[in-house]
Length: 216
Image (cartoon, rainbow, N blue to C red; front, side, top):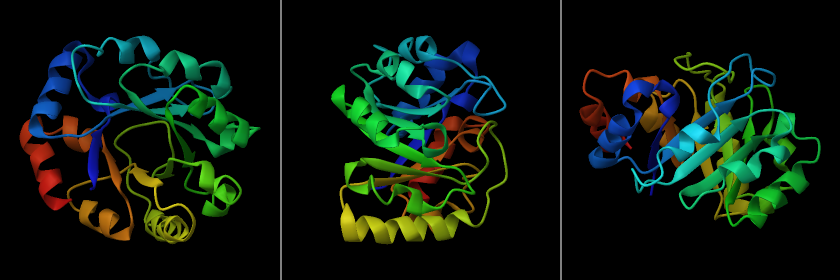
């Protein structure tokens, strides 16, 4: 089943609990948590404290996307009863296999994200260890960017790798996702769809979630 993961990076933080409740009631499946450090990416977002403020306020699982350096130092702080995935960037991890095993040691599913210029072949020797591969369809750091078309080919390549070597692996796409391209993304192989400004920037957030679900 394809799942929708609205990114709270684009939410109104003065009404974060309320907006998360809105997307949950509308049928969203996952909360995408974008963590940025101002080093690996040119922006700073928030940390584990903001994510943990949602505990007890939602039953949705957390999909934590660490766009940070030295991820091993911070992984444990994002482990909660709601945390389903913790994803690190291949470009930021010197010992990627070790980091994947660290995430899984906490009973959390491990993902690896690929920047637009990073080929799927980077995952060649860790593919069987992955619970998720995340295709960045924008350069990470800011919400509301334009979709990079070459991500479609990367999704298809990963879908073929998944079918051949790791059928349980989830393929996620993040960046520039809209009502106009979400059907193409799922057809190309995306299982988990991240949408930020296209959900939380809509005049009616609940209605927008339902529009996405209908197209997926």
